[in-house]
Amino acid sequence: MLDGKRIMIVEDEALLALDLSLTLEDEGAEIEGPFHRLEQAMRYDPQEIDAALLDVDLSGVPVFPLADVLDRRGIPFVFHTGRADLAALRERYGDVPILMKPTVPQEIVTTVSIAMRSNRDRAA
Image (cartoon, rainbow, N blue to C red; front, side):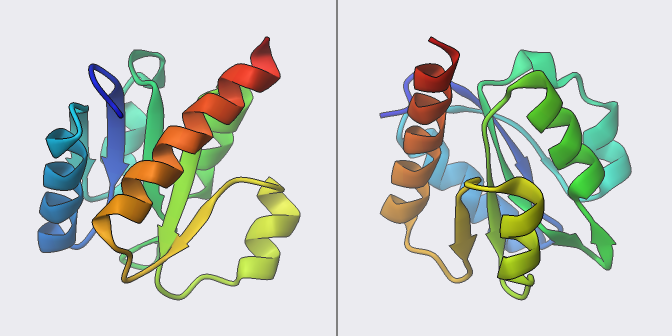
């Protein structure tokens, strides 16, 4: 499903970040990161990726500055969160997919794939 796609992972929990990386790699994705802090992720050039999987809360720091950059550049992303205010996310980011932790691996793969396909359809 994700053969050759470059996916950025931004997740502050090391074991979860590893699990997400392995899940996406098993489907053929190339992983950028995982980035555990917002500052690390912000230094990376997002033009190098096809999509991103973003934890909303990175040790108390919201991921919104990175989400805003990705949104402006037309790079699809998926929020992966355990405690975000979903209404606020919907208000700020509209139809960006939101996965609630814990999430089964296939749901992650499917949601990232759909986000990339939806983004291509909008750009066409």
